[in-house]
Length: 101
Image (cartoon, rainbow, N blue to C red; front, side, top):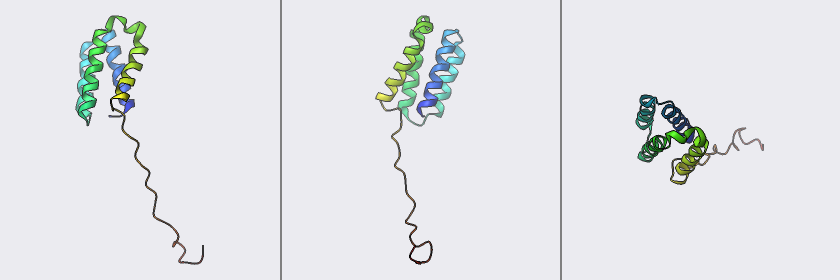
């Protein structure tokens, strides 16, 4: 799971908990756990769900701070994937049949 989908899932979960639509919060969490490829991302989604429920009465005031804290927590503990090295095409020196170009 990439960081963008993690942030969107947290926002959906926080909004659902704030409006007391718990079935949407659990459905979003279950869906993100199913589509995640690593166990650590499932743990982060469950942690975000727990944080959203524990801070439900303060999420209107501290919502952005909770979201930023969850993203920093996920970045520190490895949710973001390492950038892959670019692969360069093979040398194109012989493209013109050795005409000196």
